[in-house]
Every structure is written in C-alpha cells, then in structure tokens.
Image (cartoon, rainbow, N blue to C red; front, side, top):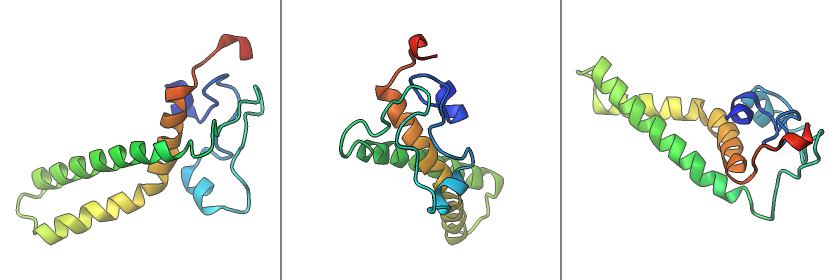
Length: 121
C-alpha cells in the first residue's frame, strides 16, 4: 500500500516508480521516458512483454467505481437533475480523472505481483 500511495518501487519502497509524483506531469510530458527499472534495487518494472495489459482491467474497475460513485452522488445531491446533465457530469469527471486512473492502475497492478523485501533497503 505504501508504494501505491507514495509512488515507490514495490520491492524496495525506495526508488521512484514514476519520474514525477504528479500524474498529470507524467502523462502530458512525453519528452522524458518512464522509469524502466528501479534506481535502488534495479527491479525491471515491465516484468514481461505485455505486462501492462492487465493494468487496463484495473483501470476499467477504477473507472466503473468512479462512475457509479459520481452517478449516485449526483442523484443524491441534485434529485431534479436532467439525465443528460448527469451523464455530462459523470463523463467530465471521468475524463478529468483519467491521468490519475492511469497512474494508480499501473501501481496497483505491479503491486499484485511484486512484494516488498527488506533485503533491498
């Protein structure tokens, strides 16, 4: 959980997973490449070819959870809201949260397979 919240390598909790902590800066700044391996323990972040395809399923689950939450929230806070306005509201916030979703889905996915080890400190 620590490495997900603080953008750290899942194995050593010291090196950075993403170059920048800000998810928007990581996605929109493509002049710099993503970190390929941990600077501390040399863990290769892409464990195998196509490893990040699984993160799409995590991203989908996060997106559905956000949509359901926003739909319920808008229904409770604005009971008289027009259905089209409600759809626009949900889509707007889903698009706004897309960089966060991308950022955290990759961190969650790699943390499923790589676990913390004290020996790499």
